[in-house]
Image 1 (cartoon, rainbow, N blue to C red):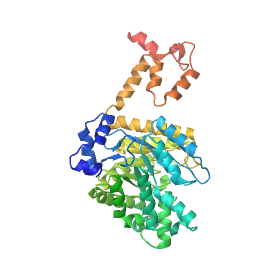
Image 2 (cartoon, one colour):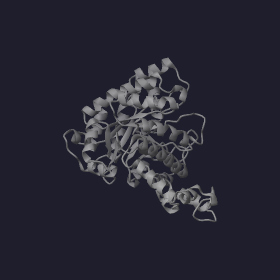
Image 3 (tube, helix red, strand yellow):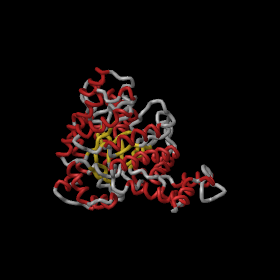
Image 4 (cartoon, helix red, strand yellow):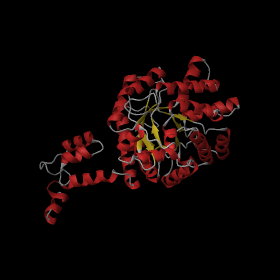
Length: 428
């Protein structure tokens, strides 16, 4: 049961047909991509009321928006407003990263409200419950605790889960030998590093990977194999710990495919511009073409307050090199929990990056949107320019604020408008 199983048998499912229609492609291309593992359709069998979403090679680059509470700020209504804003401005998926309040209730409300696929990081809840219910520390959580939460998320209808299966004794050992400026910045990765060190045992998600596959098979749950050792500073990019984790994830990908479980791979992180393409090519080779889901990457460490921009720069380069899925970064990154407005800005910045990359990759229909915009600018058709923009509300507000006395032009050039002058001169 599941999209990968059907694709291998040559079956084109209704979900594949819907995704093909959305991408303006032949459904057979979607089926073939899924059968090879370079495309996934993210939809839990219990989350039927959302549109299925295809992520992968040759498709439009997709965008994820993270929302969720913290212990310091718990307001489910605000998180639902963030969800609505993310959907409104074009996010393709949402991830609930809640760590404060009644996380079961929050997750269920988000799933109920969401019109797009929902992802989670189940080990966050495992850690919370270990501390709250056992009145102890994270290091006392058990494998059963971890898998019980994963199954609960799957039963609730979560479409994809981040699981840090590549944080192993071997990969952590390589990280320690090389040394890092920022050590481990992934929250889930850090939980597991601490747990492994205290208990002197292997990562339960790696050691019990077949148990994870059993759950994924039951719900057609996509595994997003997490980058628990991703670099949190550009000085740490592409080091031995990061690469060894990727090697392990490539091996686990093949094991998942053998069980007809869909997989995508998560990637860095903070990466200087000159290393981004190499990181994408390395992932694609080591992980056998599985879809690549990148956080940013952020190309510099010194722009807090503007990390939606540093992320968009890196995201455009990564996606043009072959990354398939961008996790947005908001202006609040490294500073605090994002607001509704931060969510809007983060999604738009990532959409700009994704679209720029889709033009470079030759994704069907991408450059045609820019051609339409160019023609509307040539005609000085302001209404159409606003309608074609990625953020029509902002474009309209700026246009209304800066209208020239001559309504045909803008306040930048006014009567000296180059477009109007060249049109007269060229006889258009």
